[in-house]
Every structure is written in structure tokens, then in C-alpha cells.
Image 1 (spheres, rainbow, N blue to C red):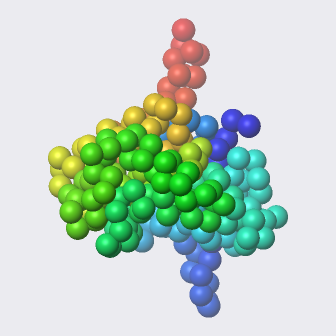
Image 2 (image 1 turned 90 degrees about the vertical axis):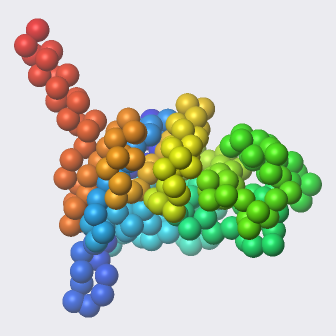
Amino acid sequence: MTHVVELRDVSREYGRPPTRALDGVSLTVDRGEMLAIVGPSGSGKSTLLNVLGTLDRPTGGSVLIDGIDVAGQTDAELSGLRARRIGFVFQQFHLSEGVTATDNVANGLLYSGVPLRERRMRAVEALERVGLGHRLGHQPNQLSGGERQRVAIARAVVHRPPMLLADEPTGNLDSKSGAGIVDLLHELHGEGTSIIVITHDNALAEKLPRRIMIRDGQLTADSRTASERVVVTAGGLS
């Protein structure tokens, strides 16, 4: 299976009369790929994130995660699918106050059936992986914004998912901390994780290998498709 996720003519409607947040979206993301999905507020990118992460089911079309069709899964099966295959990083960090970095990350394995001792061992490994081996016992209020986001990323990857979804991961950070998070995402990508960043920040998107534009619920541009057209055209001229 080469695609970590595939969307086929996906639509998502809300309310009565229905508002179409996604309108005929088709997208494939290869295993080990890194890309940004870019769009302004109200473009449908948050809905797309929820569909990609199986947090929301499409109204029409199909969504496949590692070849598994979401439509055929129960809610419990989808929860298991997310636990095994998808990591989430959000702009607001969503860390538990009064809880150490180690236990915040270990809690990412809370429903995996992994014993507490092993959860903490794997949390330490994940924190070391993101450069926070010296902050294991620190609580969120003792960490900088960039460090809190690194804890959130460690929690997202502690179960070693093949795909990481990052929603505005630098949105609450200063430029230096944000650059550090982008570097970390590139490192994780270099280790084989498929990474999808959802953002309104074109400057951030430009730092990623593939960029997809979304507007009014439709994908309007894809840098990979554009580069493929250039290669084909050049080949035809040679």
C-alpha cells in the first residue's frame, strides 16, 4: 500500500439547508510524504482535517486510511484506527496542567493496553526524540511555548503512527520557536512519518515539499501536480 490516506470525491455537508464545507475533494498522500494544506478561514481546511483524521465522516465519497475504508468501520473501530495509525498536533497544545511532560506523553497511550511502566518508558523515548530529555519532570507551566508544542508532538508520535496531522502547529509560537517546530517536523519526516500540516500561513507552507490550496471546500492547486506537468512537458520537448 503506497497511500497512507486517500480521499475520493469527498463531500461534507452541515445543517439544514445544507452548507457544503467540502465539495468533491480527491486527494492521495503517499507513505512518507510531507505536505501543507493551505487556505484562509472558512475555506474548509478544518473540516478536511477532521475527515483526514476520521474525526468526522464524509457525507459523500470515500476515505481510505492505509487502504481501510472508513465507511465500513464502527465508531469503536475508528477509535482503534486513530490510536494505531494517526497522531494529532493542535495549535492549543491540549496538555494537562499539573502533570509532568512524561505523564502528558504517556497519557497518549492510555487506551492502548500498554502497562504504565512501559507507557512511561516510551514517553521518555518520545520526549528525547523531540529534544526534551532534560524536561521530563517539568509541568506545562514550567515550559516555554515551543517546549509545550514539542511535548504535544511527542504525545502524538509516542504510539509511532504512520501519519501525523498538525493543525496550525506554529500558530501560538514566536518566530524562533515556530522555526524549531518546523525543523522538528522535517526530522520526523526524515525518519519516515507522513506529515500533513493544516495552515493558513503561506510562509510555513513554502517550507514543505508539497503544497495544496483549498478554497470554498475545493482543492484549487497542488504543487506536486504542477511539478508533474512540468516534468511531462519537459519530457515531451526533449
